[in-house]
Image (cartoon, rainbow, N blue to C red):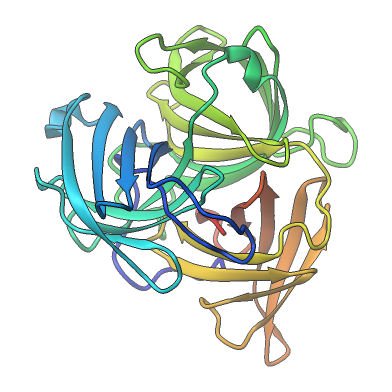
Length: 356
């Protein structure tokens, strides 16, 4: 993790969401033949996509877009076929309208989605990372709580890839949301201990309002009541909330997305499993966690270790060592019953998210 991708760029526009009938050892059990997800690919792109494993098809519908000038319209939709891989993920064919050119999706039976798609806007060589949730909470009060988050943003829209781009930076922090929908975001620190060891670098406030036409999708507003993104959340089987913010801030500006998880201590063994992880630099890897040990397909042969609850509860510092040399290091977060994110100490722009 944290290695820079060697192949073409990534990120921006739309998302897809889907569901898989995976019998994963870490999860167990079956799943319905059809499921709909709400997902984000960052920069103001929100879609719903349904996967039907009985018919081996998918369909997508754009809900919100920042790229109307490029011909993307809310409500546009298309269909395509799926083919299952040995690891339980699904390859996507091109959609009937040619908007989705292909992709790879891993969707969990408990409602998490990860993977990537290629979109016509950016060409077949560009992988757009996805993170999605099924059945997002439609009650604003369900968002209430304290969360840790990881994500990224770019100071311009239309950025093809965060790789080597000084306009893009990853971030880690905490946020509290009240039942009335007001929030306080602590960027770079732990809101529960500030101004202690992990003090906030900056603090921002704002509010969250429902979007009546899209149940479960909420308008993320600044303190000046300006739209700066979309947020949605779902409650995992373990009782934790997992949420996503699609940053669509033309004022700061900031375009990207973040994944949030209920503030809770990380416990060895709970996060065990293999995760399909995609990042904003067209990188994709399988990360396998067992206790405090990690391995990744991005650095074959490297020995990885986790230090739980560092720099604060719910986060885990990691490093990979190969031939006695630290090859990569950063901070990871696991949330809900199978979400995973990371940022890197080597590459300030990279942000990855995935599911097991």
